Image (tube, rainbow, N blue to C red; front, side):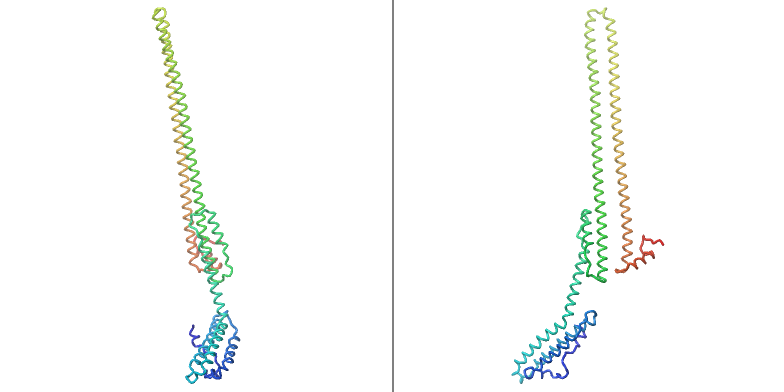
Length: 364
């Protein structure tokens, strides 16, 4: 209750200055008095568009309450000599309370309804603000899930929200969507990094398989060379056996076969030299193949390392670019936040023209 309401007089005509007399004759004058109060109240045109009009409604309802209180108090102040009329007075008091309470509520109803509507509007604004602020994400979701949350925030209706509340709702939506865009970019980068890691692991596995195939081929070549050496040794063994047989025959006819034995010995020496040369040649070829395989492995390892270094440099560059973008974004956001919460497009355009927002330039 305001200070003006405490001073509000009751709605009782001057001719009823002695209120106690109203309770005489069975309270016959009470109904006309209440009817006059009802006429005054119901003739008032409520105005809810201004504070003055709303205060007038509250004041009128308070007048009715004060009239009820004054009449009821007068009824209670009857002396002992009027006890015979107490029953009639109590009935009149109840009638006064009931009818004037109802009239008070009727007089205040437009303001009561307006206050309820305003409270409902404020509750809806608060609920909408909460919906705009809370996207419910942790940042570990997929790009599709983050986009769905952004679409939901974008679809929230602001119909029925006006004035500063509408400006604030739009600002909250803008900040929430900006946060979701940052989360979306991080999720996309996270997926790209994961795909790149899978590709790198596949390349490493392919290199391992190539090295294994090279080792198998080298082993195969080594086996071929070993088989050749075994064949050469077998041939030598056969030649030695043949020489031994001929030596026995030479012993039986030593002089006749002496020249033949010398010839065979020379043949054996020549073949042994050839076998030794073939063995050395095979060993040299094997060494060259092993060196070639080792050189191929070193070259492959270097290529993989160079590729990894390039990817690392690219990732650092992307991280630096993102950090630079974040710094620019923070500087622009800070400059915009220094402006009024309800800055108009014209004020924002003026700030851009004056160079008050960093990293932005208007070219005329």
